[in-house]
Length: 449
Image (cartoon, rainbow, N blue to C red; front, side, top):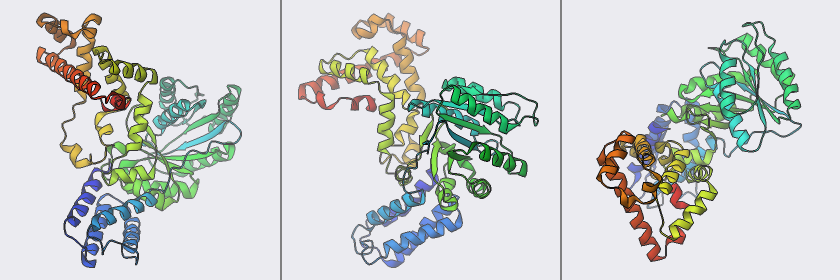
């Protein structure tokens, strides 16, 4: 995410380090490089120009420390960070779902943007927050659209209203109104409407969306955009906003966007917030859009709040308390190790999780050898042990290790490596207990596995 922009900006800031005070000429050169970095990230020209102008104005303000300080880089980074936050929207904009239920969310977008998948992701997220969402299939153009939404609804375990008809002959407004009545009957408080898309914007699409807007009076009109299309996504957003009037946008495939041009231009161009972002292919991979956290990621500062939230979502409170009691008694078994591996996997891909750590920038991650399969191998090895072996690893002799290796599809060297990791962890826990530091370990151990 934002890898190219992150690397370019890091290069600009590195050039400022160790040089003492910054001259006006050097600052001007740095600002030119920042502008080039933004343009290379596919940020719209006017947006990049205005951004650099605001940074320059603040850097040269009478009360600025940039030119007077012996550490100008720190002050410039602070100014760039603050301006990035404003460029991205300033603050989190939650979904407006008040009023008489069910609150209706009209989801729009072109084909291939990930619109239908997003609907299911949003339903799952709202369900996790105590809402009762219902999906409705109002894409009557694409033959497999209804089937796809029903499959995704089943995965999210939420109801889906669907009415089949011959392509092009169904009444999309009637379907939406029937779904609204069905949602009320089932006491659903959110109705998520998956609308038809096109390969490009055309009048039939806009007319259909306008009729749905009039009939449903949606609380939210969300435009789903593929982050990897850069300025094209911005152009699409501008047209939809002018014709339909969006309340916010959703960026999908943000995890694969190395440039970031769409995210950095959208709010400035449309005046409407980015509300949610898709960060993976799984149905749970949907995040709220926090401008301050995103600015921190772009500048390589990490995103500890998101990391903490992921840990809290993945960690089972009862298991955490159980583990804490075992740690106090230094009674850590392979069964406990397996539980913690499963908790870590719930937090998402390792590379994504590591990317939230401060200082773990795109360049560091690019060179890191992160093998997601290693956790799978460790899990397979532990699961190939008997219950007795998991609880008493000391009985794992040569023949048992060979059997475990065969059962897990690994070799004896892998089994020995896992046993060494386990023994090292046991030693660490004994040392912590002896030093009286076990109380400080707590739940942090779970997130650090």
